[in-house]
Length: 126
Image (cartoon, rainbow, N blue to C red; front, top):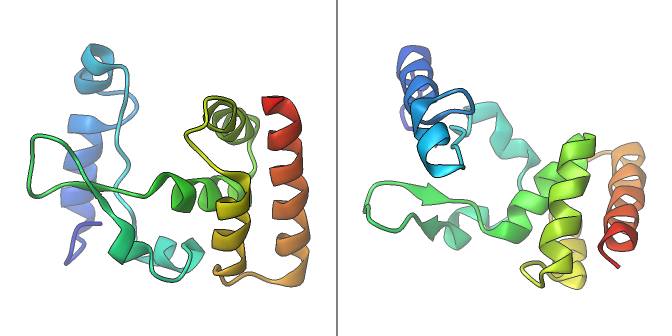
């Protein structure tokens, strides 16, 4: 998250490190800037669990279980595939994802959907 957030800076960061950037072409991974409104989709305490990006003091990544909680809310096929791959390789623990989902504000409908999606990702991981 860039604070204070400025749309112009967000666009520059996306061009430099986003999904269509040269950075992604060279490294095989990309970055998304967390927009101010996205904070509402994150589990309580996420800021304390940020993981420093190796080689820099200024950039941090979401804890993988916090990221999984967000991905399961979104629920695109690629999000479920990512969660399944991380579960299969033991980089994620299903019980910890469940805990993070309980710590996330969402309506009842979305809570049911995220639970179903988590169960699907677990099934895909097996």
